[in-house]
Amino acid sequence: MPYAVHNYFVVRGSLGSSAGGQDIWQFGVRCLNAGTVGGTPPSQAATDKVRSAAVTMITSAGNAGNFSSSVTLDEVRGYTIGADGRAFGPPQISAAPSQTKGAATVNLHPWSTAVAITFDAGGARGGRFGRIYLPPQGISVGPDGRMANSSADGFVNMVKTFLTTGFGVSPGEDYVPVVASARYGTLKPIQQLRCGTVPDTQRRRDNRLAENYRTVQMN
Image (cartoon, rainbow, N blue to C red; front, side, top):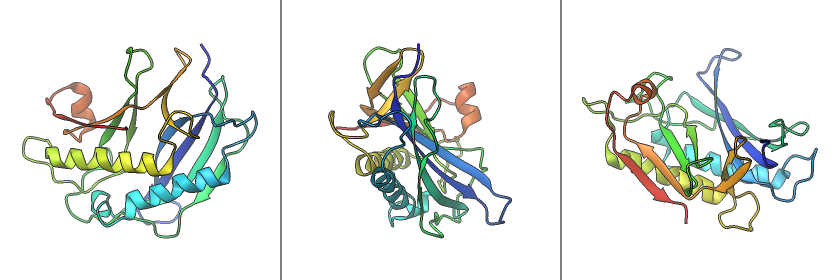
């Protein structure tokens, strides 16, 4: 089944400081199509709004220590995605201010270690879940391989603030974040965010460590 036409905002940046040699990090948020016609990306104003929320997420006093000082936010790209899963034309681009960076210099981990935020749209399981991986963090992980519940709480609340300030929040508003499914052809508004306390993708995949899941409702 084809995708339902929707908008897709990609938050992206670089890791490290050597020009031309950086690794790239990025995550994307899909949204209910806000009257955008085929061949047209989201508006510049909408893309700027997402970029402003991303800048705040990475640099605000309460959050900067969550992200490694090697993390630089470069830009946000806004796309309109067609039924074939491809973008209509070039993206709308909103560049971040120079040196928009995290601040953490301690409790750093390999770049392959990531905090995952699960998007839960509720209802039937089909087309219900989505996920983003945040760029490298500065987080304290205990001898048991887990971060504190309070750290996971901080991440889900941080991402909720990013979504509610950068996007629409209620049905009928423009650019409401959704879980998009090509298999089911659905766009389901995100109802809940979830973060596990094991910030190690390999251990999570192999299910080697039981973890606590911390959640927050979007509304």
